[in-house]
Amino acid sequence: MKIYTYPSEAAETRVKAVVKRDIAFDDAMVASVKQILEDVRARGDAALIDYANRFDSPDLTVDELRVTPAEFEAAAGAVDADFMGSLNRATEHIEGFHRQQLRKSWIDTARPGTLLGQMFNPVGAAGVYVPGGQGGNTPLVSSVLMGVIPARIAGVEKICMVTPPTRDGSVNPHMLVAAERVGVDAVYKVGSAWAIAALTYGTETVPGCDVIVGPGNIYVTIAKKIVSGTVGIDMIAGPSEVLVIADDDANPEYTAADLLSQAEHDVLASAILVTDSQKTAEAVQAAVAEQVKQLHRRDIAEKSLADYGAIMVVPDIDAAIDLANKMAPEHLELHIREPFDHLGKIRNAGAVFVGDYTPEPVGDYIAGPNHVLPTAGTARFSSALSVDNFIKKTSIIHYSEAAFRDEAEDIMRLADIEGLGAHANSVRIRLEK
Image (tube, rainbow, N blue to C red; front, top):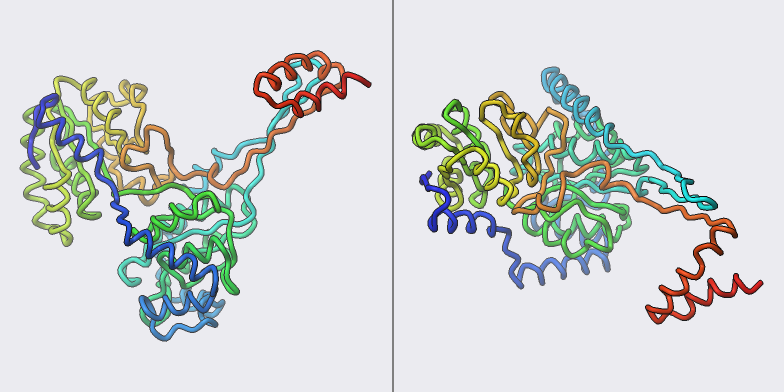
């Protein structure tokens, strides 16, 4: 990792390269995804099976699209007690956190003669996309929990999960056990853009949904972007990123490990250290160089660090926080003295990890907050996946005749200014009786 002095021209260039990186949607990809969406919309299950046979499982049939009770039963017998213990702990923590997000409908009668309020209701059906995880070899159990639990807490009546089948037409048992544990109503063996199409439009087997959430490859991301507006989506997620603020007390080995935990995600991932200590900068640089040699995904980590990694040396911690707010990282770690004294200064971050013993993977798996977070600077205006993604807000308005007459002239005046005579007349006609 290269060390920069910030602010400087070279450092600003590097910051811009990191902030502006994103998934590239070329025209050919978009056209291909649009064709898939329309194909599934027109042909339903037949299209799903064609794509599944071509890209995932050559012998999968329509009758096998939905995971059966027998498959869930077999999965339960294929996982060990230690896994169940970890799954139960993570589930309980994530449920507990998301219960705090539930809203209550409210009514306000402060203005005489009026009743105003909001009703909060869950959407009717939600679809959770879970990537296949290298052909089922690395099941993304945490993605099941993070997608399904907030929907269930919100009160969504029907929650289905889609995930690509393995080559033999199965789904990893850890995924199925996790899905059953958190209350998924059905799991379907479909992946990529055709899964998003099925969840959007519905097929003979896969029901259409109101909201679709969950991470995926570039084709999933493009598909979600295209169908957004027809259905609700969580966000358009880009490459993973972490920014660590560290001072001269920070443990360089911990800091290096945390940077690498994001760099190993993919070659577009970003890992940035911001420190007010040249000593820390150099120590972390050396620790990263040593630790990366031990990684199974070394090539990926080295590429991401070379292209989008950096160590920024700033004048003080306030300058570090200013830079963090500018970059609006997905994950922000604070390895500094008295971190809670600085927490209130942070405005733009998907999630903040406070202290030496709160590395980002704690949030990925077990702490409780959702790990589906805004990336590529979108934490300036976006938030983590939450119960709110599965909730609709309906306004309630009631006026008595007296309250109506008291405000009628203002309503008509504003309507007339906007040139909407029928609006004004719907008020005026009530004044004439």
